[in-house]
Length: 158
Ligand code: SF4
Image 1 (cartoon, rainbow, N blue to C red):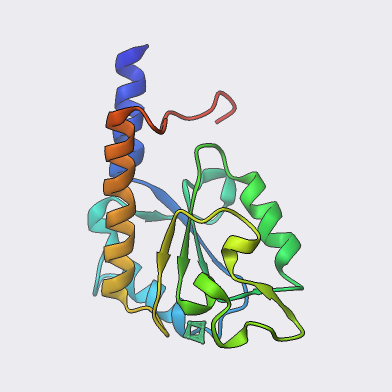
Image 2 (image 1 turned 45 degrees about the vertical axis):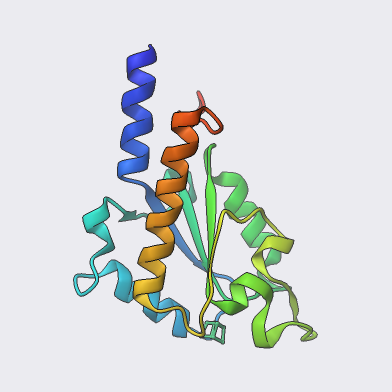
């Protein structure tokens, strides 16, 4: 059982599945995320695979401030992801609300609604910064897993 856990942990760190969700971005950050995932920057070479459902995702990549209209959906998507799950905030708006902070229709930055594991600032965040952020998150997870601070082993319902 121990060896199976180790193999699953290794596989999840080496090939995390991600879900991209626009929580209210102007779309510039989204274009950069797509550029990072597609062949020019090729995030897939690090084993990162884009998925279409939160039930299959390990990492939720969010762009934009959280608008009041999307807040409930963001929480629902986060709740549908299996444990352990991680959230990456891409762009200044996702990190803090950015230029939209304080707007009547904006709730806040991502971390005011769900827990965030990594912040990638920039307006928009460049593909290189996005790749750097994801790789650093994976490296820190691997380090924590080795120390026993975090378990990458899936929950039984997965
Ligand atoms: S950080 Fe800049 S580019 Fe990204 S969603 Fe906000 S305004 Fe748009």
